[in-house]
Amino acid sequence: MGGLDSLDPPWVWIAIGLALAALELLVPGVYLIWLAAAAIITGALTFVLDLGLAVQVSNFVFLALILAFSARRLLRDRPIVGADPLLNKRGGRLIGETALVTQAFEGGTGRIRHGDSEWLARGADIAAGQRVRIIGHEGSVLLVEPLTLLADEGTVPPVQSPPPGGG
Image (cartoon, one colour):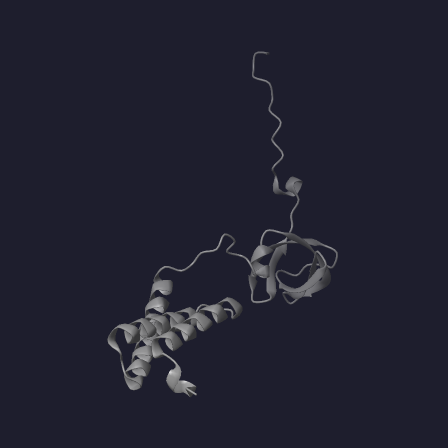
């Protein structure tokens, strides 16, 4: 009645590799796939070379280390860039937006409302009810500046006088 003696070691390693690859889909991060690759390669080598158990285990450990550290270096040198680099960076997404001061800024700190959220903010002293522009963030604290209207910035084109001599 067999027991563990009836299991073929190469297929055990390949099954372990496939199970680790399936777990990679469920667990966040990219690290189980390297262990899966090491297990599958160990299974293939065991199938070809008929290795003993101690050699199989040490082969798996060394392959896992080599693959994991090689992948780490590869991903460090060529990072994966997503289509939206500000995904899950809410403070970064708010830069350039306008907000309403809900608690006056005293000593450079106050509270603002953007959408349905209230944020702690830093900036010049501003009265409650004023509008501000978000210019940056430090962690969860937004950096703001007072919002100036276009007419206040002198952007109205100057009135030109007609050229001399009629026209």
